[in-house]
Length: 165
Image: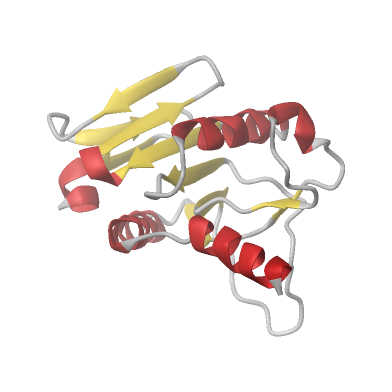
């Protein structure tokens, strides 16, 4: 019974919040309207070939970004579905939840870059800020004083006002 409680607590800690959910929906909607990309929410990325413990992560088989952005248009398939993507996205977006730490997400970013993902966004709803990382050492920050968030790798420009309202 204790294991179930611990599992439930661990799942609760991973849950988002209202702010997290709203920002995730807005970002997904803005990116969905860009025909160059296909956004996917909570899509599992297969990392069985990589030892994630080197990044301080206890995850063994998959990473699940809040939003993954793939280049090109993709359709829902009637016959084939994928439980864990082996193809890595162009970029991932992680939205800080009240129960997460920035260090946890930065450790995931190191793993994402090792997997070949080109860009990682750290979205912090509580301060209405976005940090766009193009490597584990280079980032550009955007806040509400900026008109838009710019990801040069994906050539993405999104209005801050539409993300945070």
